[in-house]
Length: 202
Image 1 (cartoon, helix red, strand yellow):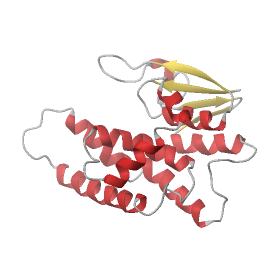
Image 2 (cartoon, helix red, strand yellow):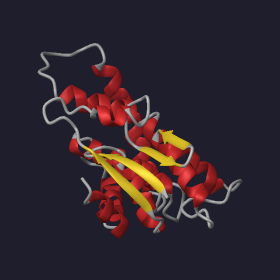
Image 3 (cartoon, one colour):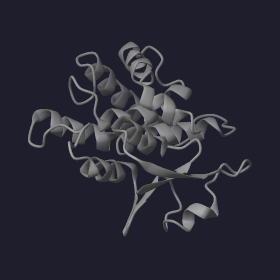
Image 4 (cartoon, one colour):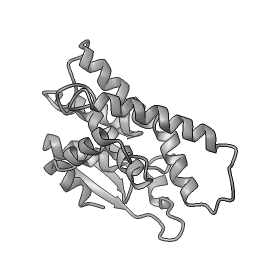
């Protein structure tokens, strides 16, 4: 059985959400952040050298990095649900958005989150760069979601799971103001029962 090492208040919620969507059996091992530093505990380092979550363990397979973990889980599903048929236009949209979540979007959103935690006096060297990246990325997201129901087309996929969790962080940072299509999308997907169950794990 697949084991998921889950860190509270982290992007490992993605993995739990996908497994719940698939109704795939798994064992969850919870790890708690340090209440003062907010860092992951040493117990995760014992599972994977990066000391980050999510980590999945399945026999001899030990995987970190959300998008790689999502692909592995879908490969274990006989019907390969929540991933479009390879070679179709939807499949390549799926790939783009799955990687966009932690690639193009992840850096500016997480940087913005850290910037809001600091006592900042005046403009800093990275401010203009981050502001530009945020504007470009969220304009692209808003345009996409104004034209289709989900990131890879008309059907919900694991790319939506990848994107939703980073969009939640962006929303907490106040980055979704006046992004009506993005806000409506986020409200819709977070009503899914599998999301609700994954979110309940902290």
